[in-house]
Amino acid sequence: MKVINLDHISAKPLLPEVKTVMIDAIEKDYHNPASQHKSGEEAAAALQQARAAVAGLLNCNTPKEIVFTSGGTESVNHAIKGVAMANEDKGKHIITSNIEHNAVIRSLRRLKASGFAVTSLPVDSGGRVNPQDVADAITKDTILVSIMHSNNETGTIQPIEEIGEITREKKVIFHSDAVDSVGVVPLDVQKLGVDLLSFASNTFYGPVGVGGLFIRRGTRIFPLLEGGVQENNKRAGAENLIGIIGTGKAAALALRNMDMRLTHLKALKAQLLTELPNFIDEYIVNTHPDNSLPNLMSISIKYIEGESVMLMLDDDNIAVSTRSACATGSLRASHVLLSLGLSHADAQGTLVLSFGIDNTEADITTFLKALKNVVTTLRDISPLYQKKVTEN
Amino acid sequence: MYNKTVMDHFRNPRNVGVIEDADGVGEVGNPLCGDMMTIYLKIKDERIADIKFQTFGCGSAIAVSSMITEIARGKSLVDAKQLTNKDVAKALEGLPKNKLHCSNLGADALQLAIQNYEDKLAGVTRPEPIRKEKHEHSHGEKCYCPYCDIEIQADITFCDACQSSLEDEH
Image (cartoon, rainbow over all chains, first blue to last red; front, top):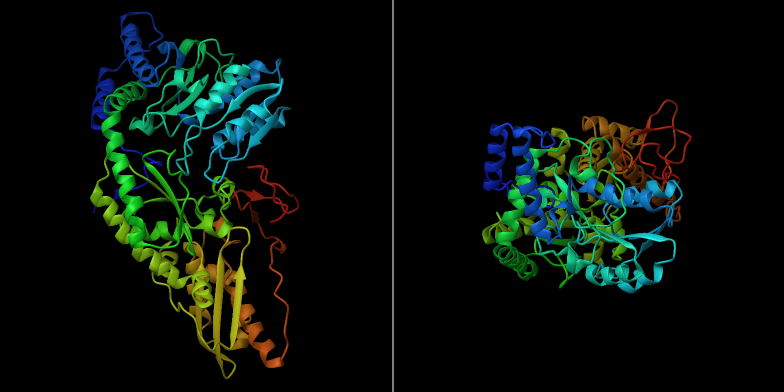
């Protein structure tokens, strides 16, 4: 039976057009783009075409501002560690937020251990950083501000443009982890005012294992990987050309079809938000009502635990993701949800629903019907629900 | 993630519910990851005549609750008192290592329910039980980080692998 994928944040299918160009690339048996003979030049041209497509998606000044990497995690590590290492003579202070992805958190933890100071800013109950807090936190020692574009657990979008104005004025390097935004919502690195922007190819239906980092001309940053002179001397190692060619195609399609995709995704999200109260009660919507991704919604269902919900929906062939501590492998309540002010018990009942262009209205209806049954079953078992019923 | 026996008890939990006029009630909760379990007992001739449970928690927590009620049902109180969390994990043919400490609370809930029954008989009232947050080491027992599942040394307060502080849990 067909599985309804409402967990696109974990994996998106490759677009057929992307598959085709990747298979062609495999069959062409490209040489090394760094080689200067004819075969190498052909590979270099394919690489250049993909780079131009991604640069077009982000409105870069030049394709040279795009560095291909092995994915979002490497891009984030590169941005943060590379800027820290290249600028430590200027200062050792970095500003971030409390709701970043682990790639940011752990990179900064590593830097802290080697003498950097990190200020982590809180978010309001809507999950957003106050740009004024960034301005207030900047000192003469500040070398980097790293704030994510959209949150991977809630879909809430941060006021990056406003923060970009501040960092430009104060001449501090600004990185944004836009792994869940690039190719989903229109992004323009000029308007955003970022110096560095991390992205992942799979977010816009390209292959897993490829991503990139936008590095604005003139930004002081060291490479994370050193060796050869690939990627304009910013990322050593022979390029993953097949993956990069797929990424270029996916980027071109994302740009071309952006409006159509947005309309579709927004309609699915609106349907879910509108119909949800007809199926279940007592839940919290963790996603910002106005500033959020069109393809992601986080809800915390009271009195039940997310992993159980996920497993039961799986029986109904519906894939969702949960942010319950019990299911993360870390067994810790999500720092993002706690930052929003959620209690531990409420955070336990959190589902992250992420749609894709392959979802339909019927998928949402099927999900809602299945969810209603699962919630009823689990609440019947729940001592918390029992207490609530008894108390009323 | 879970084996067939665990999934069976999760999907078809046995003995779910509340016993309104229970002779003993045991409630445990894990403040770390939020699982909560309540066990209700009906005692007849010093045997567990009826047992029901309610659980808020992950698949493993629900399976554990279901299994302890199956094991304990019909047992004499003397025998039931011997049941441990390890027995439950064994009956379930194993649980993921990192779930052993947080969701395997079924026997604890059962023991509290029996204690509650005996206290009622003896006319003893106890304050709210102190929740066991730090686990005790028995000789030769291996410990695993609750955050990253890597084996940890018995005497340290942080995990080497993920650098998590374990002061509250270990």
